[in-house]
Image 1 (cartoon, rainbow, N blue to C red):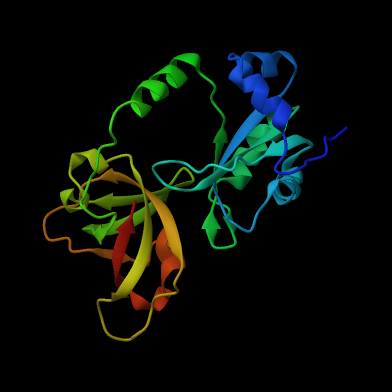
Image 2: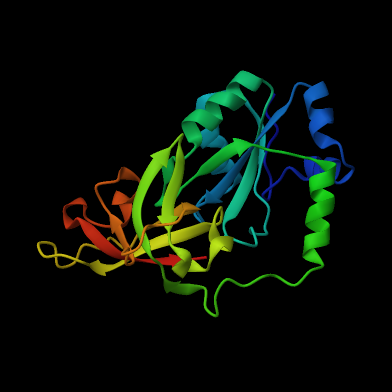
Length: 228
């Protein structure tokens, strides 16, 4: 029987996580939790349930009121009572476009040691990559690898510390003729994984499917802006 979601619900599950060892307890009871990131503001726990029930029988869903600190994105959790359904949800739901937001879906991890490390990091002042969170980047190509959104950037985005970080990419204008107003106003979340060769100057090649959402495909290369 599916639990009724109320007020962003799933409160009993939140209490269980606080006790520690939630992953082992869930596995013992045949429950498998999927983590969903970059949830659009228009989606509530009920809508999340309706979306992920397409991949298997959903036990319940939960969307916290808080956001992720680094990306400022909304996130939530979906629980299945079958590991196959959870695996299908990850395969089908990852990079799924919902209301102009690209979902990031993976298996939730509840590691006591990692939570301890996170608590320690909260006591330390946050490291800043730039004086402003909105700045020009030197990105010259994008591609999809195993379902993940990926961009390559030079050290202009904030040095080597940027590698592995997530950024939101938006279009700021064309770099060639043909499409004078290519920007769609949409954005895409990418992960910085590499550094560009010399000569790259804040552009994205729209021949790559991962970035076509931010501008007209016929625009070729466009100027972009990264927002942390």
